[in-house]
Amino acid sequence: MSSAHQPEASASKPVLYAIGCGSPLTRDLHRLIAAGQRDGWDVCAILTPDGRKFADEPALARQTGHPVRWAYKDPADPDVLPTPDALVVAPATVNTVNKWAAGITDTLALGLLVESQGRGVPIVAMPFTNAAMATHPAFQEGLRRLRDWNVTVLFGEDVLPLHAPGTGERYIHLFPWDRAIDVLRTRLGGELAN
Image (cartoon, rainbow, N blue to C red; front, side, top):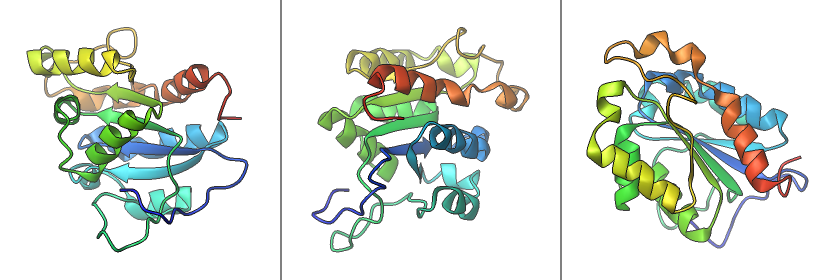
């Protein structure tokens, strides 16, 4: 993940990693990227392996001006992305939340989340799941643990009403992408973002 060589971000722009997980909602990750760019961030796209099933990687690379990363690099290879000043994981799946809360780093996205959390980098997580999966004790405990560890978790009826299993496609258009950027701006108090 880290190396001595880091590509330089624009001198006037902080770096945001937009992390998309294995959900149909990841088709719209471009909306989070656009919101971050409007707010003055240099945005890089990171995907989980299952997130790749839904994302248009060439379009995300064109939009960000950076390669889309989804796998760990070889140790001898240079980093191709600048170091993040903040991360937003949206949509965060139940799988990602559970693994992240357990400290599992078997994907690049999880490794970046765990490492960034340890470095004190601001992180916003916006889970998207159905009402049945949301009640699982491991997921609920994972959300509590992330909040206890200073991760801003945007989840619940006040963010997006939970839906019945098998109906998620009907709610994708309601996902509040801009809210993650708004919360990040508030959390940072203008410290990084324009």
